[in-house]
Length: 162
Image (cartoon, rainbow, N blue to C red; front, top):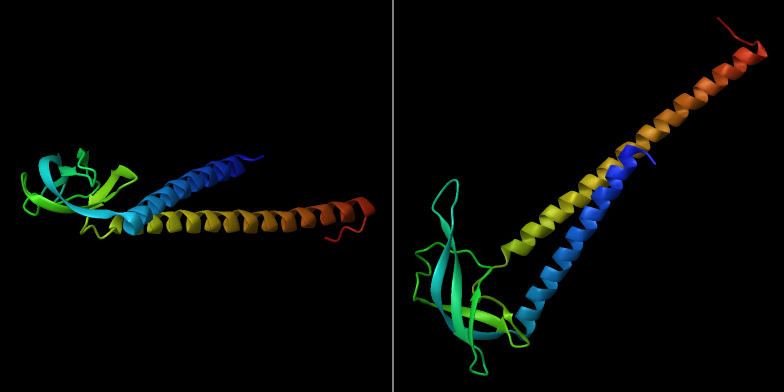
């Protein structure tokens, strides 16, 4: 097995692991969309995410009460501008009644999944491109090797033409 084949297998493994992660993320979002319950939550904290360019973004920590009346506090996946949802403001959320830790902002557009799908598609396209390049190089080497074998046969048989 060549080094390039080992690199290809490692890349394939990473792509499959990323696909598994993406599948689980899509399944989680789908469960939230199909059986989620809408409720109001209150932003109790904003976790600052410094940006290299532009204003800083914030991930809210939201407190809400489930349908059973249990108080829940969780960090949301959503990222907001501080002005959109300041601390102590109400935010509409959707949570999974079977898994209340699976919650997100009701107005979340889900661009995260789209970005992951584009990245995954790029990984697959790069893998296919690399595979095709390696196979075309192998075919070229086989042709060159067959020419060398034929030239050696001519030399051995004495039919060498100069």
